[in-house]
Length: 107
Image 1 (cartoon, helix red, strand yellow):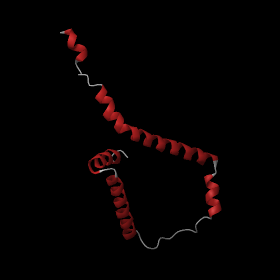
Image 2 (tube, helix red, strand yellow):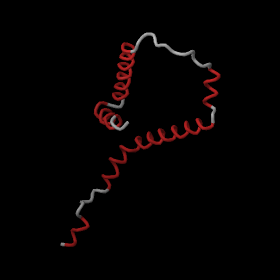
Image 3 (cartoon, helix red, strand yellow):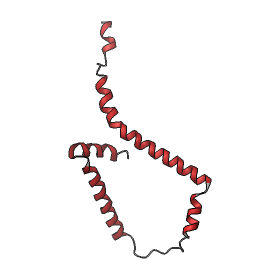
Image 4 (tube, one colour):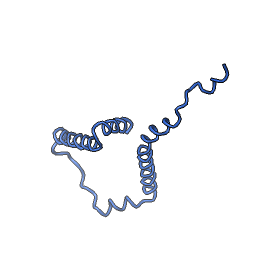
């Protein structure tokens, strides 16, 4: 997110909003193809857990709290990134005061 958001913003502003989405889709396809090629075909594993036991794990109170914390944390970061570009563009434009303006009257 630290690198992807600024590059995605630059990429999107120069080539249109669809370009970053297409780039992510292409990178996802490349990653899937590489994983398919590089991972072994047969991986030894234990018998999978049943569907009912998997849903039972989701209802444990400590895990529900963890899910909620993760959801609000990641959701909050996306909210910040949504409004970050307009803030960085509009706020400095309104405050175009020279740095040394408070000292201009002292000379």
